[in-house]
Image (cartoon, rainbow, N blue to C red; front, side, top):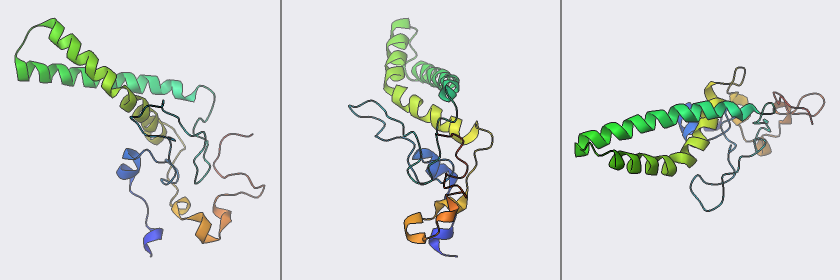
Length: 156
């Protein structure tokens, strides 16, 4: 078994926002924190999985983002209370809202990645797609009999 035949680990692929099916292609086209707004790739550049499985698919990510925000708010409020011991509501409001704004790109990105990795039934890692197809010579892994990508759920 060569190093290219080993499966790619889940957590490093998740943290780097890689495709949940091949764990090689990027889900997002640009960096998390930058001057341009975040742009999500429509398909995986490696295995051609369509990320938005159906219209409105990522609306569910709002609920995941909400849960992440609530966890962050509670964590920050507890940290403020423990570190400062203050009861000033303005201190809590300013710090919590600042953390909310700072973490909004993080929440946007990882709510979608969590949705793709753990909340989408039928979307699983396929280790065979992790091989470099350009050097493999075996295109049968990504194309079906009609030439369309296997496992790609949208027709164009």
